[in-house]
Length: 139
Length: 191
Image (cartoon, rainbow over all chains, first blue to last red; front, side, top):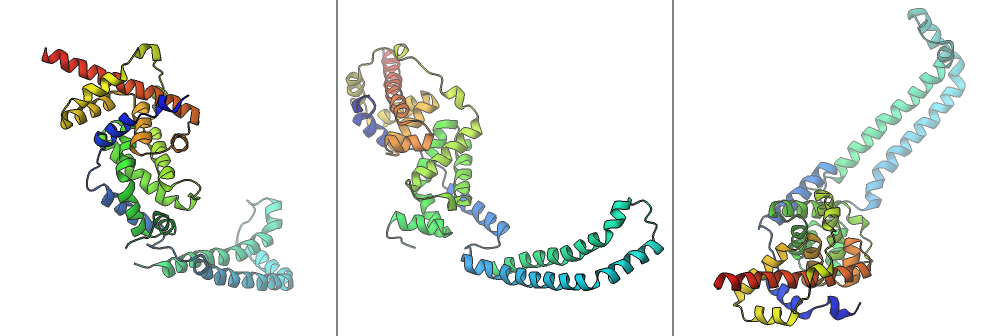
């Protein structure tokens, strides 16, 4: 197709002269308000912090969590037999665990172990989120 | 704050600078609104779409790679938002045969329009634009008013370059036809 078939200087001139349409005056302020509300809702920040700063909080939190987990592994290795077996035995005396299947009963020490590990991790995750939000707040 | 170039302004906005983004809104809101208006026809809807598109662009600003102009990227968001809002894209592409448009004397339309007063000319042009299919009005807006190249119109709309040229060709003919109809009805009303 030749250029003159679709490119028409007269139409260009005429449309530039007449075809402009203006939005209402408050369009921009509406957009800005919506974005500001969105920013506060999402991060509590107007200007995001640099990546290095954003990660520093998480680094220390997850570092601590990792150390706690390693310590717990050692505790688990040395005390599993005595500690968790005692816990289960006491539970069996005090509670009726007959509703649990044999497999679940057998896996109870591991389940308790998993909960013991995951709970502090989860708490640390929540705390980390809370602190990194607070850190980023720059009104 | 003043920025030395649009490139700097875009970079700042992508980095999260809201005042730079505010200036980009100033620059592009009119054309973004015009694109939305050509698709949905109603001012209220077009404003809502423009607002949504600017907010979407802000949320996804990290996805802007800088390979195309910022305006091209933004107008594509406006176009997609408008299309998904109307869900009528298939209706818009209803083709009108060139034969149905008939022969048009381009020069005669241009001369007749040239004899009109400025306000009348603007009124007729807007009336003709409003009588076009949304796709036709949109492609004329993007090419003539927003001064995008054929390639950029293709990026915004997702049409191939050849398709853009064909659509521009047809839209131009239909625009002249609409103007011709308006002019002849005016002549009839005078007589």
